[in-house]
Image (cartoon, rainbow, N blue to C red):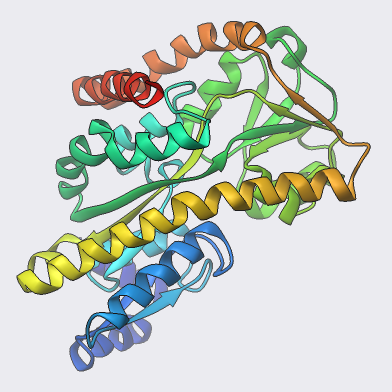
Length: 339
């Protein structure tokens, strides 16, 4: 059974037929799906991409915000089937499809300093060269990989060591590697869809979670926990892809158009994401002045970095030799960016 057939059975033939009819009738109207809203980092990137495409061609871009086309798995099936031309999804959701992409979830292999972050994502060999062929194997043309902000852990109680995390139920995205991470860090992780997180915190089903400051502020997660801790372990990262058959069928001029638009959007979001993250943190400090905000010192991070080696081993076991090579290159890119 093909991807498109499975998808048709899931959402119904009439909707698939409508999407296909749209493709045939309006070949210059490109569809772009994402996991967030228009005012969120993915939405801002998508809007900039759309502006660049429409300002430099007769093509139009139709953006589908989170939930419009079903869950993340539904949108990815549409992209692989050619019903969508572009899609933005994070490795936390694509890891089952592309195990190597979970390298972005391995702790302490990405920078957190904004200036270093820009260089890592703009010039890093792993990000800009090594993933292309891997995404191609899944019928996807990788256009951009960008960070949305440093991951921060919010909890009910303070922690500064792995021993402090013992017994804490930390919500993660539905990624096996994230479960490995918080197990290694000493916590008791629980995989939970985003839509269940707020209820989980209110009912004490979970004691904490991780997200960038922009999300913590936007969804009042600081009002559902007592402490926010910067562990320095990584970025929330996402990837923008095109359907490979669609991309290959473009003229050379349109391929250049797409590449230029994706790079313009990348330059834009690398600055804006930093601003949004800082704004989110500033709002938390202003509206919730009693909220405890901790940033682990280099010495305090060391035990977590040591435990992260077990996560690296779990990643390599799943992603194989290519994953191991990517991980080592990301470490080298991190050193280069820091210099």
